[in-house]
Image (cartoon, rainbow, N blue to C red; front, top):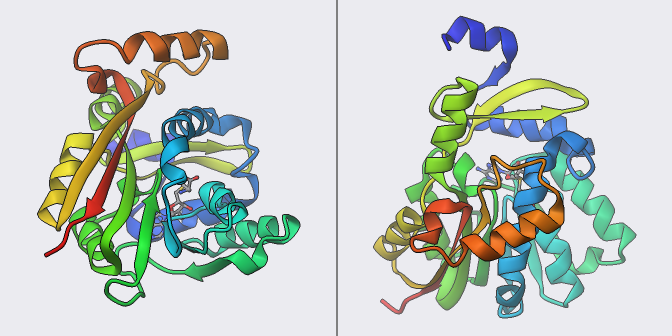
Length: 264
Ligand SMILES: C[S@@+](CC[C@H](N)C(=O)[O-])C[C@H]1O[C@@H](n2cnc3c(N)ncnc32)[C@H](O)[C@@H]1O
């Protein structure tokens, strides 16, 4: 589809500022919007594969691009000292409200900051989580070098990414350009924003280039970007069947990499 047609169908928000604007606009409806059903599906599948890993995190842990605090709340309620950063002030305000509602305000430090330029000292953190955010980074390698810088040796790092092959197919079907993803919400115009996608293997390679030892690579949400309307029990069955396939990562919409910071 040509640029002019696209602009008529979608509001196009460019670069990092565009990402911030989108989440500012979405903040109040982010947790409840019926139109973010793909996000909800990805979240559910991701939480399933991360459940055991979350228990391994030690304080202090950094939640990069924490959004409305899906994981920050879980970690804080387990007594883990959590630092939650995000580019969007409005998303952070939603998180603050939820923390106050749950009586967890004391356990979480909420900071407006950029995941690609972390305002923390070298080797100051024991764990780092970056879920459904990495693909918005303009300079992913720089972000990983920052993750490596702020983590202590043996610090655990978890990153999730949308499978770039699935994104490519989705873009082709929707006729949208290479580095954008469409977002819908009841109170925003249909919007295209910068989001790239990687494969888990690419993330693993970047991690190892910046001093991490890979621990595990997991796939989940099998064909989840293309099956939004199949009922939950059928989707669960699909997850169970497809995970057994040879090269099952190829079929997973979401890849999750777990790594540890190596000694120098
Ligand atoms: C899809 S939400 C994911 C929120 C949360 N991590 C989760 O998994 O539920 C992406 C979040 O990343 C934030 N974000 C995007 N780019 C960022 C950056 N460069 N630095 C910090 N936060 C960023 C957005 O503002 C948004 O809140």
